[in-house]
Amino acid sequence: MRRFVDTNIFVYALTGHPRFGEVAKNILGRIEAGEEALTSTLVLCEVAWVLEAMGKQGEIKPALEKILSYESLKVLSFDVDDLLLGVNYMRAYRVDFNDGVNVAVLERNGVFEVYSNDKRHLGKVDFVKLVFE
Image 1 (tube, rainbow, N blue to C red):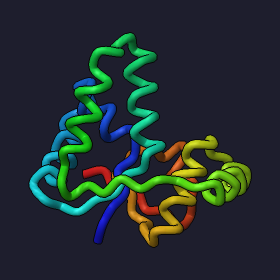
Image 2: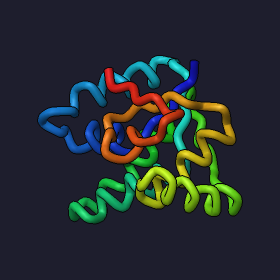
Image 3: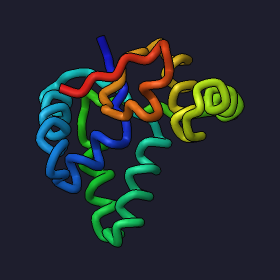
């Protein structure tokens, strides 16, 4: 089963998060080794925004190049319908807009398992299962 990779997995691995970094690196290691997974263009933007906010602008391009080098990681784009449906999910599940849009992308692509530990947002969506191992 293909899983969607949420922003926090990439950020934890890239920044060496003291608590979650190793789990995130293990997840990305499996993907780099060939496990099929998905992410979205919005997630890639979020990774760049986080690095920028941390003052790590010089790390954005190498980070994106590394993520895009995973042959078994498919990057999904969002469309205008996903934006509107994302607003509906934002309201229904009380998540932020970007998570709502990513949920719309997940649903459109028939993916309901997400590599993430974001219980505060994605964990509220009853048809999404979080996986963090």
